Image (tube, rainbow, N blue to C red; front, side, top):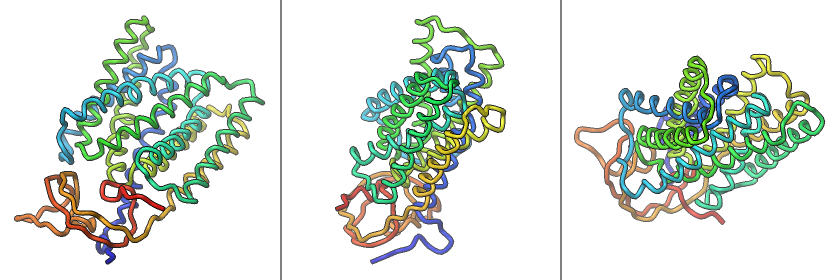
Length: 357
Protein backbone atom coordinates (compact mmCIF):
# COMPACT_ATOMS: atom_id res chain seq x y z
CA UNK A 1 0.00 0.00 0.00
CA UNK A 2 1.28 3.47 -0.86
CA UNK A 3 -0.07 6.94 -0.21
CA UNK A 4 0.54 10.56 -1.07
CA UNK A 5 -0.18 13.46 1.27
CA UNK A 6 -2.84 14.71 -1.06
CA UNK A 7 -3.13 17.03 -4.04
CA UNK A 8 -1.46 20.35 -3.34
CA UNK A 9 0.02 19.21 -0.01
CA UNK A 10 3.78 19.46 0.48
CA UNK A 11 5.73 16.30 1.22
CA UNK A 12 6.50 15.62 4.89
CA UNK A 13 10.21 16.06 4.18
CA UNK A 14 9.61 19.30 2.27
CA UNK A 15 7.46 20.75 5.06
CA UNK A 16 10.06 19.96 7.71
CA UNK A 17 12.94 21.13 5.52
CA UNK A 18 11.26 24.50 4.99
CA UNK A 19 10.91 25.01 8.73
CA UNK A 20 14.57 24.03 9.25
CA UNK A 21 15.74 26.52 6.62
CA UNK A 22 13.70 29.31 8.24
CA UNK A 23 15.20 28.40 11.62
CA UNK A 24 18.67 28.54 10.11
CA UNK A 25 18.11 31.97 8.55
CA UNK A 26 16.73 33.37 11.81
CA UNK A 27 19.79 32.10 13.71
CA UNK A 28 22.49 32.87 11.15
CA UNK A 29 21.37 36.45 10.63
CA UNK A 30 22.13 37.26 14.28
CA UNK A 31 25.77 36.07 14.29
CA UNK A 32 27.35 39.38 13.16
CA UNK A 33 25.13 41.23 15.64
CA UNK A 34 26.25 38.97 18.51
CA UNK A 35 29.91 39.43 17.53
CA UNK A 36 29.46 43.23 17.41
CA UNK A 37 27.26 43.78 20.47
CA UNK A 38 29.17 41.29 22.60
CA UNK A 39 32.44 43.25 22.43
CA UNK A 40 33.40 44.47 25.86
CA UNK A 41 30.84 42.27 27.64
CA UNK A 42 31.56 38.99 29.37
CA UNK A 43 30.52 35.79 27.54
CA UNK A 44 28.21 34.73 30.38
CA UNK A 45 26.40 38.09 30.38
CA UNK A 46 26.14 37.87 26.59
CA UNK A 47 24.58 34.41 26.81
CA UNK A 48 22.19 35.57 29.53
CA UNK A 49 20.92 38.49 27.43
CA UNK A 50 20.50 36.25 24.37
CA UNK A 51 18.33 33.81 26.26
CA UNK A 52 16.44 36.57 28.03
CA UNK A 53 15.42 37.70 24.54
CA UNK A 54 14.50 34.13 23.61
CA UNK A 55 12.34 33.82 26.74
CA UNK A 56 10.48 37.05 25.91
CA UNK A 57 10.04 35.87 22.32
CA UNK A 58 8.60 32.52 23.48
CA UNK A 59 6.01 34.18 25.69
CA UNK A 60 5.04 36.66 22.97
CA UNK A 61 4.67 33.99 20.28
CA UNK A 62 2.76 31.83 22.74
CA UNK A 63 0.12 34.53 23.01
CA UNK A 64 -0.46 34.83 19.26
CA UNK A 65 0.30 31.31 17.96
CA UNK A 66 -2.06 28.39 18.64
CA UNK A 67 -0.89 25.70 21.06
CA UNK A 68 0.49 22.67 19.23
CA UNK A 69 1.68 19.76 21.31
CA UNK A 70 1.64 17.89 24.58
CA UNK A 71 1.76 19.65 27.98
CA UNK A 72 4.88 19.69 30.15
CA UNK A 73 5.17 16.72 32.54
CA UNK A 74 7.47 15.97 35.47
CA UNK A 75 9.28 13.30 33.42
CA UNK A 76 10.52 16.03 31.07
CA UNK A 77 12.25 18.13 33.74
CA UNK A 78 15.53 16.18 33.86
CA UNK A 79 15.97 16.46 30.11
CA UNK A 80 15.22 20.18 30.27
CA UNK A 81 17.84 20.67 32.99
CA UNK A 82 20.49 18.95 30.82
CA UNK A 83 19.47 21.01 27.78
CA UNK A 84 19.62 24.25 29.75
CA UNK A 85 23.11 23.44 31.03
CA UNK A 86 24.59 22.30 27.71
CA UNK A 87 22.64 24.27 25.12
CA UNK A 88 21.53 27.42 26.93
CA UNK A 89 24.53 28.04 29.17
CA UNK A 90 27.70 26.31 27.91
CA UNK A 91 27.19 26.63 24.14
CA UNK A 92 26.35 30.37 23.86
CA UNK A 93 29.08 31.21 26.36
CA UNK A 94 31.68 29.37 24.27
CA UNK A 95 30.26 30.98 21.10
CA UNK A 96 30.40 34.52 22.51
CA UNK A 97 33.99 34.00 23.73
CA UNK A 98 35.06 32.42 20.44
CA UNK A 99 33.43 35.01 18.16
CA UNK A 100 35.33 37.78 19.93
CA UNK A 101 38.58 36.07 18.83
CA UNK A 102 37.83 34.53 15.41
CA UNK A 103 35.75 37.29 13.81
CA UNK A 104 32.17 36.98 12.60
CA UNK A 105 32.90 35.50 9.15
CA UNK A 106 35.18 32.62 10.14
CA UNK A 107 33.27 32.03 13.37
CA UNK A 108 30.00 31.76 11.46
CA UNK A 109 31.45 29.23 9.01
CA UNK A 110 32.82 27.11 11.85
CA UNK A 111 29.27 26.68 13.13
CA UNK A 112 28.79 24.04 10.41
CA UNK A 113 30.36 21.62 12.87
CA UNK A 114 26.99 21.49 14.60
CA UNK A 115 25.49 19.63 11.63
CA UNK A 116 28.26 17.03 11.68
CA UNK A 117 27.98 16.34 15.41
CA UNK A 118 24.17 16.30 15.28
CA UNK A 119 24.02 13.72 12.48
CA UNK A 120 26.45 11.42 14.28
CA UNK A 121 24.57 11.69 17.60
CA UNK A 122 21.20 11.12 15.90
CA UNK A 123 22.59 7.98 14.31
CA UNK A 124 24.06 6.70 17.58
CA UNK A 125 21.11 7.55 19.85
CA UNK A 126 18.03 7.30 17.59
CA UNK A 127 19.11 4.98 14.76
CA UNK A 128 18.40 7.70 12.19
CA UNK A 129 19.69 6.42 8.83
CA UNK A 130 22.81 7.88 7.20
CA UNK A 131 22.94 6.95 3.53
CA UNK A 132 25.67 7.56 0.96
CA UNK A 133 24.40 11.09 0.23
CA UNK A 134 24.48 12.15 3.89
CA UNK A 135 27.88 10.51 4.40
CA UNK A 136 29.28 12.40 1.39
CA UNK A 137 27.89 15.66 2.79
CA UNK A 138 29.61 15.03 6.12
CA UNK A 139 32.94 14.40 4.36
CA UNK A 140 32.59 17.69 2.48
CA UNK A 141 31.91 19.52 5.74
CA UNK A 142 34.96 17.94 7.35
CA UNK A 143 37.06 19.11 4.40
CA UNK A 144 35.56 22.56 4.80
CA UNK A 145 36.66 22.60 8.42
CA UNK A 146 40.14 21.50 7.37
CA UNK A 147 40.25 24.40 4.89
CA UNK A 148 39.49 26.84 7.69
CA UNK A 149 42.27 25.31 9.79
CA UNK A 150 44.64 25.74 6.85
CA UNK A 151 43.59 29.38 6.61
CA UNK A 152 44.29 29.80 10.30
CA UNK A 153 47.80 28.40 9.87
CA UNK A 154 48.69 30.78 7.01
CA UNK A 155 47.00 33.95 8.27
CA UNK A 156 47.89 35.80 11.41
CA UNK A 157 44.45 37.25 12.18
CA UNK A 158 42.85 34.06 13.44
CA UNK A 159 42.78 32.73 16.99
CA UNK A 160 43.13 28.96 17.37
CA UNK A 161 41.65 29.14 20.88
CA UNK A 162 38.70 31.10 19.52
CA UNK A 163 38.16 28.43 16.87
CA UNK A 164 38.29 25.68 19.50
CA UNK A 165 35.70 27.57 21.56
CA UNK A 166 33.34 27.89 18.58
CA UNK A 167 33.84 24.20 17.77
CA UNK A 168 33.05 23.38 21.41
CA UNK A 169 29.85 25.41 21.11
CA UNK A 170 28.80 23.39 18.06
CA UNK A 171 29.41 20.11 19.91
CA UNK A 172 27.39 21.34 22.88
CA UNK A 173 24.52 22.41 20.63
CA UNK A 174 24.61 19.01 18.91
CA UNK A 175 24.06 17.36 22.30
CA UNK A 176 21.27 19.90 22.86
CA UNK A 177 19.72 18.95 19.50
CA UNK A 178 19.81 15.25 20.33
CA UNK A 179 18.20 15.83 23.72
CA UNK A 180 15.57 18.18 22.22
CA UNK A 181 14.40 15.44 19.84
CA UNK A 182 12.72 13.77 22.80
CA UNK A 183 10.76 16.97 23.46
CA UNK A 184 9.64 17.67 19.89
CA UNK A 185 6.07 16.59 20.62
CA UNK A 186 5.66 19.26 23.34
CA UNK A 187 4.19 22.68 22.66
CA UNK A 188 7.12 24.69 21.15
CA UNK A 189 6.36 27.62 23.45
CA UNK A 190 6.98 25.37 26.47
CA UNK A 191 10.26 24.08 25.02
CA UNK A 192 11.64 27.52 24.16
CA UNK A 193 10.46 29.28 27.33
CA UNK A 194 11.71 26.55 29.68
CA UNK A 195 15.08 26.15 28.01
CA UNK A 196 15.77 29.86 27.63
CA UNK A 197 14.49 30.74 31.09
CA UNK A 198 16.72 28.14 32.77
CA UNK A 199 19.67 29.17 30.61
CA UNK A 200 19.26 32.85 31.44
CA UNK A 201 19.07 32.14 35.18
CA UNK A 202 22.13 29.88 35.12
CA UNK A 203 24.32 32.28 33.13
CA UNK A 204 23.37 35.40 35.07
CA UNK A 205 24.18 33.64 38.35
CA UNK A 206 27.60 32.56 37.05
CA UNK A 207 28.25 36.01 35.58
CA UNK A 208 27.56 37.68 38.91
CA UNK A 209 29.85 35.23 40.70
CA UNK A 210 32.67 35.97 38.24
CA UNK A 211 32.04 39.72 38.27
CA UNK A 212 31.81 39.99 34.49
CA UNK A 213 31.63 43.46 32.91
CA UNK A 214 28.22 44.66 31.78
CA UNK A 215 27.59 45.89 28.22
CA UNK A 216 26.22 49.33 27.43
CA UNK A 217 22.45 49.73 27.36
CA UNK A 218 22.50 49.88 23.55
CA UNK A 219 24.57 46.68 23.31
CA UNK A 220 22.32 44.95 25.84
CA UNK A 221 19.19 45.81 23.85
CA UNK A 222 20.83 44.55 20.65
CA UNK A 223 21.71 41.25 22.32
CA UNK A 224 18.16 40.84 23.64
CA UNK A 225 16.81 41.49 20.12
CA UNK A 226 19.29 38.98 18.67
CA UNK A 227 18.17 36.43 21.24
CA UNK A 228 14.49 36.95 20.44
CA UNK A 229 15.10 36.18 16.76
CA UNK A 230 18.15 33.94 16.66
CA UNK A 231 17.38 31.87 19.74
CA UNK A 232 13.65 32.26 20.44
CA UNK A 233 12.00 32.24 17.01
CA UNK A 234 14.74 30.04 15.55
CA UNK A 235 14.39 27.40 18.28
CA UNK A 236 10.60 27.33 17.88
CA UNK A 237 10.99 26.64 14.15
CA UNK A 238 13.75 24.12 14.87
CA UNK A 239 11.53 22.12 17.26
CA UNK A 240 8.72 22.05 14.69
CA UNK A 241 11.19 20.84 12.04
CA UNK A 242 12.54 18.09 14.33
CA UNK A 243 8.96 16.94 14.87
CA UNK A 244 8.65 16.30 11.13
CA UNK A 245 12.07 15.17 9.89
CA UNK A 246 14.08 14.08 12.93
CA UNK A 247 17.28 15.36 14.53
CA UNK A 248 19.86 14.47 11.87
CA UNK A 249 18.17 16.09 8.89
CA UNK A 250 17.07 19.15 10.83
CA UNK A 251 20.62 19.61 12.09
CA UNK A 252 22.01 19.10 8.60
CA UNK A 253 19.72 21.65 6.96
CA UNK A 254 20.44 24.04 9.82
CA UNK A 255 23.97 24.22 8.38
CA UNK A 256 22.54 26.96 6.15
CA UNK A 257 22.79 29.27 9.19
CA UNK A 258 26.57 29.86 9.04
CA UNK A 259 26.36 30.96 5.40
CA UNK A 260 23.74 33.54 6.29
CA UNK A 261 25.92 34.85 9.12
CA UNK A 262 29.12 34.80 7.06
CA UNK A 263 27.46 36.56 4.11
CA UNK A 264 26.09 39.31 6.33
CA UNK A 265 29.42 39.71 8.10
CA UNK A 266 31.21 39.98 4.74
CA UNK A 267 28.66 42.53 3.51
CA UNK A 268 29.21 44.57 6.67
CA UNK A 269 32.95 44.75 6.03
CA UNK A 270 34.41 41.74 7.86
CA UNK A 271 36.50 40.47 4.93
CA UNK A 272 39.45 39.02 6.83
CA UNK A 273 38.62 35.40 6.02
CA UNK A 274 40.62 35.11 2.79
CA UNK A 275 40.66 32.46 0.06
CA UNK A 276 40.67 29.49 2.43
CA UNK A 277 37.35 30.61 3.87
CA UNK A 278 35.96 30.87 0.32
CA UNK A 279 37.06 27.28 -0.37
CA UNK A 280 35.49 26.17 2.92
CA UNK A 281 32.25 27.97 2.03
CA UNK A 282 32.05 26.11 -1.30
CA UNK A 283 32.62 22.76 0.42
CA UNK A 284 30.03 23.54 3.07
CA UNK A 285 27.56 24.66 0.39
CA UNK A 286 28.00 21.39 -1.50
CA UNK A 287 27.37 19.46 1.70
CA UNK A 288 24.19 21.40 2.46
CA UNK A 289 22.95 20.87 -1.12
CA UNK A 290 23.34 17.11 -0.72
CA UNK A 291 21.30 17.20 2.48
CA UNK A 292 18.53 19.33 1.01
CA UNK A 293 18.09 17.10 -2.04
CA UNK A 294 18.00 13.80 -0.15
CA UNK A 295 14.98 11.49 -0.51
CA UNK A 296 14.12 8.50 1.67
CA UNK A 297 11.57 6.02 0.30
CA UNK A 298 11.06 2.31 1.03
CA UNK A 299 8.49 -0.21 2.22
CA UNK A 300 8.11 -0.31 6.00
CA UNK A 301 5.78 -1.56 8.73
CA UNK A 302 4.08 0.31 11.57
CA UNK A 303 3.10 -1.76 14.61
CA UNK A 304 -0.18 -1.05 16.39
CA UNK A 305 0.25 1.73 18.94
CA UNK A 306 -1.77 4.12 21.08
CA UNK A 307 -0.19 7.51 21.83
CA UNK A 308 -0.70 11.27 22.07
CA UNK A 309 1.24 13.68 19.85
CA UNK A 310 0.70 16.57 17.41
CA UNK A 311 -0.60 15.37 14.03
CA UNK A 312 -2.59 16.28 10.92
CA UNK A 313 -5.22 14.19 9.16
CA UNK A 314 -3.66 14.72 5.70
CA UNK A 315 -0.22 13.27 6.56
CA UNK A 316 -1.03 9.71 5.47
CA UNK A 317 -1.03 8.24 8.99
CA UNK A 318 -4.03 9.80 10.73
CA UNK A 319 -6.93 9.54 8.26
CA UNK A 320 -8.32 6.54 10.16
CA UNK A 321 -9.91 8.63 12.92
CA UNK A 322 -12.36 11.49 12.54
CA UNK A 323 -13.70 14.39 14.56
CA UNK A 324 -17.19 15.81 14.77
CA UNK A 325 -17.06 18.59 13.79
CA UNK A 326 -14.05 17.98 11.49
CA UNK A 327 -10.72 19.41 12.67
CA UNK A 328 -8.39 21.01 10.13
CA UNK A 329 -4.69 21.59 10.83
CA UNK A 330 -2.32 20.28 13.49
CA UNK A 331 -3.72 19.18 16.85
CA UNK A 332 -2.95 16.73 19.64
CA UNK A 333 -5.03 14.10 21.48
CA UNK A 334 -4.78 10.38 22.40
CA UNK A 335 -5.41 8.13 19.41
CA UNK A 336 -4.74 4.58 18.25
CA UNK A 337 -3.08 3.20 15.09
CA UNK A 338 -3.71 -0.26 13.68
CA UNK A 339 -0.78 -2.22 12.24
CA UNK A 340 -0.05 -1.18 8.65
CA UNK A 341 2.56 -1.84 5.98
CA UNK A 342 3.08 0.69 3.19
CA UNK A 343 5.62 2.61 1.13
CA UNK A 344 6.10 6.37 0.81
CA UNK A 345 8.63 9.17 1.19
CA UNK A 346 9.37 9.79 4.85
CA UNK A 347 11.89 11.04 7.37
CA UNK A 348 12.75 9.63 10.83
CA UNK A 349 9.90 11.33 12.67
CA UNK A 350 7.80 9.87 15.51
CA UNK A 351 6.13 7.36 13.19
CA UNK A 352 9.29 6.26 11.39
CA UNK A 353 11.75 5.29 14.10
CA UNK A 354 12.48 1.97 12.42
CA UNK A 355 15.76 0.14 11.83
CA UNK A 356 17.49 0.04 8.44
CA UNK A 357 19.70 -2.72 7.17
